[in-house]
Length: 359
Image (cartoon, rainbow, N blue to C red; front, side, top):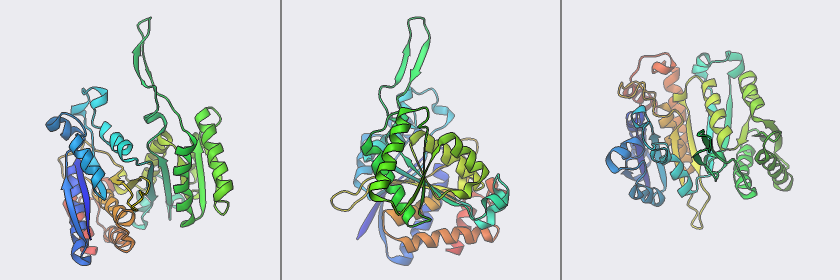
């Protein structure tokens, strides 16, 4: 059977790190006989420049037809003057919405060779392995009403709506609880139930679902500000963190820095299984387009490579191959392979070489 992937390198360092992931995919295909049909497309700023919009209807249609989307990064200062509704970042929001990608999985793992690279003391992060499950099609990023208006006194007012309903909360909570069952069996649900009605509903729905279906999983609740503090104070207390769109965005970047670099961590954003058993999914590094180093050939490709590993695991059911890629990354780091963000001087391509040499 032939699988299909839509590759969207995007902007900034996206087109620099994506080829390294595709080199790893080629190696997997060579060794396993996997057949993959690869389509490529424009997204973000590059799509604005050539197609007039950050995500064309043709690219969106292709994204809906393939088995998985492998995404690079979008954005950069050259598009800051675009109308808000046509900025590069709109592309990723539209892909999540149109494909129904409601569960964003962001692992934060400290690789043993890089324990000294963390912003925290090694004793605090050694062995860290947590997963943030972020709801990604609701909350303040998608809530209505939203907009910018001019008040009678001439002031401009920007407004967004934070809202969640039972169905949205339950479906992402199930993902978190199911993941926890294969890990340490611990879920920490994060919100601001003390000051936000949406947070109160979130807490009540998660608690009720736990009582009905997941009593074997240990559940605790935590306010988002406390969670941020606890991630910096004692991050290994966490296994699976379940949270909404806004808090998940912030907390996952904080957790990423505990590992040493944003350039190390992948993510998967998953939808629901359809009647044929197919699950729409998008995989991307969490580091963004990094315009300050774009074009220098020094971006760390590990997050993009590990995003490919997540694709193999979640969309192709190839857990063995995913583990092999993850092990190859660790082996390369153990041999001293480092890009600039983690204290070395390897180029993007040289880091790709290092991973391939250990795969």
